[in-house]
Length: 441
Image (cartoon, rainbow, N blue to C red; front, side):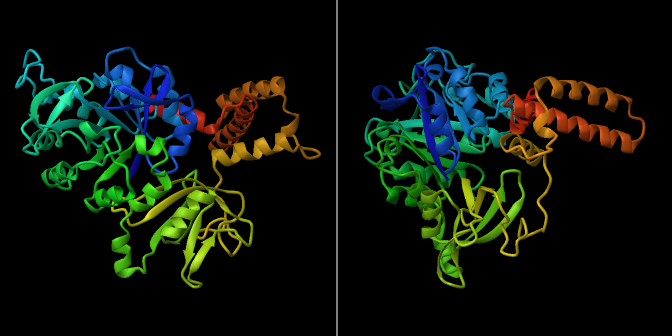
């Protein structure tokens, strides 16, 4: 998997060299999050919080519903981690505090250790599967090739060996984020040796994401061959590497070449979770899907590139693409207006479109945009729809039988959705709020 980084400092997206020198800054965090989300999870890092210079909570939290985000920087309590998860964060990244053992005093060499109490509390609160531990490291003095973990914005050496400490930390997290600090922001290439050592030490129980200096597609392919993910920053923002190329290079094409003619299964899924169709993709099809923004396949019968809907017009607009855990199968989340199946059915796995709350809102929105003669929905102004919501709520409360409850609930849901639509509130906004309440303890 390829992960794009959005580093926030003083309310702006920045890229720093060696964590200190400002190289570039932008003001379009929301647009970047939505764009980066097409290719993989997005790492959102609060640099000010990490350095104890305030925070950017108000800017970062809205991003968590725009993209599948992993969030780090200044997460110093299980309560804050749980709050971020409730707001939509997929995973939480912790760094310095993971190595500041409260039983050890001071800040000198040898006075750091794995903060097991903190990590245990985190895993109890949010689950191991949501926790990423950042192991930021530099080569030890002396040139023996061994790395030492640094904390406090990469300023303080801990005396802790990277590989041994990371191995001990891996029991608490589903993933380790290794940053080669001396290469960070330099685009001079990552040191592959510590990545290999980490991969060997942690086995299959904990994923490794590597960052710091990555600047070529060959490096991304080499990391993928080690079954490691990559996090991109400077090379991405300067245009040296595109996310489309990085995504394609991170897939396990070798496995597909061995028995599948270099083709990878590609499943198309609607935003509400309905499986629409399945096909196959080669490198060209993946690249063209991102370039066109429309889902492309490789036709096995014609042995050529094929964009879904190029003849029928029933194209599938690409929202995001993800690889499975083995990186040899793909899932594309798409938007489709017409049927996905060549038979005219909505899905290749069923004839009818599943009726969802999202579909109801889409129908209501269309009634407002293009009111047809006699459309009752189009007559519902703000005052009338509020009256109907109150009326239907009362009727639902008074319903006695199962059929009455079902009918009145359907009426209430319809009018409530009309009200949401008039107020510019999406069904997903409501579901996100319910999700937040469910996750918030």
